[in-house]
Amino acid sequence: MNKTQAKEHLEVLTNLAVLLAAVSILAVLTLNYFGGRKPVPQIVEGLQKGQQFPAIPGVDYRGSASTLLVAMSTECGYCTQSIPFYNQLADMKNTGKISLRTVALFPNLDDEVQQYTRQHQLKTDHKSSVDFGQLKLAGTPTMILVDQNGRVINFWVGALKPDAQRQFLNSLETQYSAS
Image (tube, rainbow, N blue to C red; front, side, top):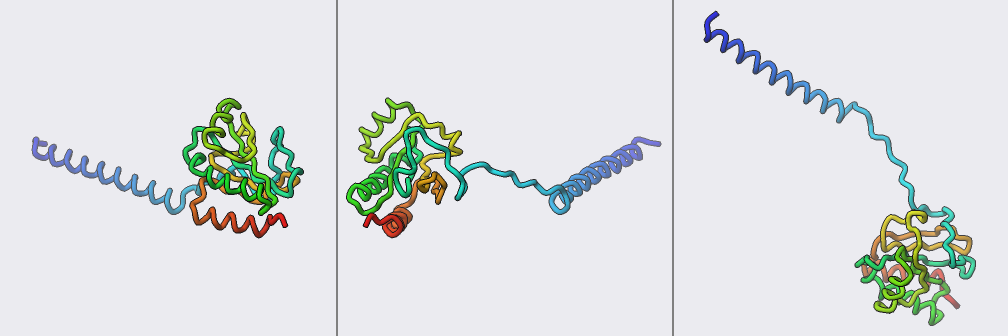
């Protein structure tokens, strides 16, 4: 066998190896896409309507027909931007428009929370050093509406846009009118 024939055989073998590798990769991708194992859905723990919300020291759910818990952090920019909205809720309660108590919950230490609430003039009741992991709260701001037995009526994760804030306030006036 001369060099030319050996070179041709090597070239054919190389081309076959590349073709075989490409077919194998396509076969694996096709099997995974069409007939492979389907991913098993993960059960995500978190807030669920109707579930019993954990007790928070110093917050008595029976003190009001419903309580709006607002999970905040002193380091959360969206929380700070939402303070006028939370103050509007407190004003509605204080003027008798609604009979809904609002309590801000913070994972931060008491000194930080006191300084933050004074600086930003947050009007709601507040509790500091709350363990958000134990409450299954993944992010801030989060609002959780609970009934007098501590059952979750509804919840909202993230800062509400102005339109959603107006709708929220209107629904509160309808459902929780103090008169």
